[in-house]
Structures are given as structure tokens and as C-alpha cells.
Image (cartoon, rainbow, N blue to C red; front, side, top):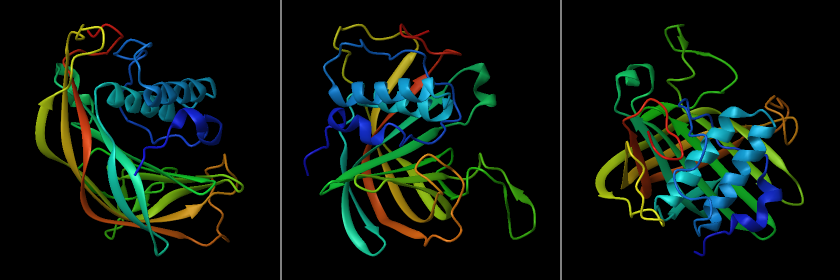
Length: 261
């Protein structure tokens, strides 16, 4: 399946942000901004637009996605059943972890699955983010009680979102179900940056992730809203166990910058 050139559809997905990374994203890319990667440049533009709109969480995850692409990850095929219809997406996982004294204050490994496809004149994007190998999908705007009556921390759950952009624009939030994004360690070093300068304090690995999901999405009241429309029908997105490409970045500094630590 030919990869979608996001540079040509920025207007369609400018508000279709990724989920909050729960970690600090770098203020600048760890590769030269002129690096010849149009897909990564598109994610950078989306990150800038979200930052201007004061949507810090989505801006951060766009930045991580751009870094993953510049690090050399190649999106792979992900087969999905969307409301009973088989669909094929391009997908990859970007993950980040920290090997510093401050790591106790951060998730041990945040990872996000990014998947997109175009069917006719409709662009579809869905996003799954979590800090554990598998987790229940929670509405990001609310705490949810467990069977014992205790509240589940939103950080411990998976966040999911689904977007359709085209003649009719819609946004959906994951409200229930389960998701898995677990590393299948097959690490190899990322290729050297285009300028030959490897940032200090950053260890980049290309690896694989096992993914699976069974998520119920609820439509929001409008394209840009996160308020659920209780009257709208729900959407079910299912993907059986599959392995997709991914990139993992390990930082040995407290805060990444364009030159590393």
C-alpha cells in the first residue's frame, strides 16, 4: 500500500492531533529541519499549529512522531476492522523512555500507535497512546470507576482517538475497550542523521511492537469538540494481534534539545 503524503493533506488533518505523551517533548527536532523527509516535516507543521492553538499534548505527540520518522522508522501495514469493514492502514509506533535520576517521575516507556489511510476522498486517522504494554481504553476527560468502585487513573489507561476528514468531518474519542502496544525487542541502531552528527545523550533504536485493539469510539459534538454526543451511534475498531515497525528513543538527559543534552 502506498504511503499517504501528509504534506498534501495538512489542511485536512490540522486538528486531528495525537494523544498526550505524558512526557516532555523536545522543543526542536533532533535532526536538521532541512532533512529530506516530507512526512516528518508535515508532522512538525502540525505540531507547530497545535502549539499555536495551545494544545500542548497533541503538539508534543506530533513532535515525537516527526522524530520517529527522521530516526528512520518505515511505516508498515496494519489491518483493521472498522464497524465491520476491513481496512488497511499505514502505521508505526513511536516510543520514548528516560534513563536518568528523574525517570521515577516519568512513565517508564510511553508509546503511541499512529495509523492512517485514505479511502476515496476521506482521510481516516486513529491514535492509541499508553504507558503500559496493555490497558483499558478510558475517556481522557474523565476518571472511570473500576469494578471495585475505585477510580482508575487516566494515566494508567490507554487514550484513543479516531478522525475522519473529507466531505464530512468527524472526531471520535475512545470510551471503552482494550488496547495493547508492547515492544517485541528487535533493536538495531537508528541510521546516522543526515548531517552525520549524532545528538549527545540520545540512544535511538529501531524495533518492533506487537499491537492489538478492540475499542469503542463515541462521536464528539463537533469536529473540534471533546464533548461526547450521547445521541450519536458508537463506532467499533478492532485489530487482531499484529507486529508493526517502531522506534524507541532513550534519553540520558533531563530535557532534550536540538543538540541533545
